[in-house]
Amino acid sequence: MGPHEGSLSRARPLIARLTAAAAETCGPCFAFPSNLSSGPCRRPALREGRGVGCGSPKMAAAPAGSAADAQARFGRSVKGLLIDRVTGCGTDVIALTKQLLGHAARNMVMQEDAILHSEDSLRKMAIITTHLQYQQEAIQKNVEHSSNLQDQLRHLLK
Image (cartoon, rainbow, N blue to C red):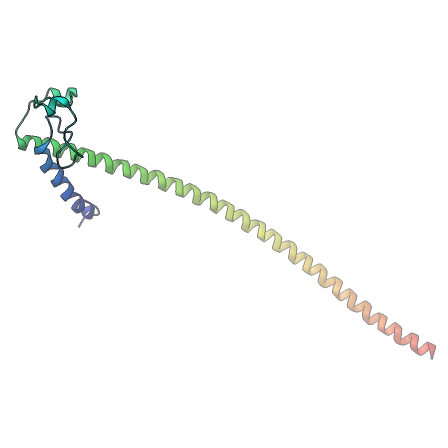
């Protein structure tokens, strides 16, 4: 089973319905299959049975063919529309992927900057911690020295 087999199997009933509906179109332009349109044909020429299509140059030159010919033309039209739709979706997916990758790259740069800033902060805190330890040792020595001095003062005062 190919990567698109599931999509194609879901599309086949729709294609079959659309190609079957081509035989029941309102005119040679095959623009409004009766089972897909919302109501009767809105074109006066078609409502009156004159058999004039939409007037597009492409379809005006085409002779009215058999139902099989109409189905084949409609099938090719549907296939072309599906190909255009798949191509458009593929293009959209590529654009979205590029956009997401751009966002991810920007976020990654921001994270790297934050990590570098954190590393700098940790280095500075390590230096500060070392200085505080030196100060603590100095204070402890001074406290010990002062307690020795207090003891000496007490002995002298006795």
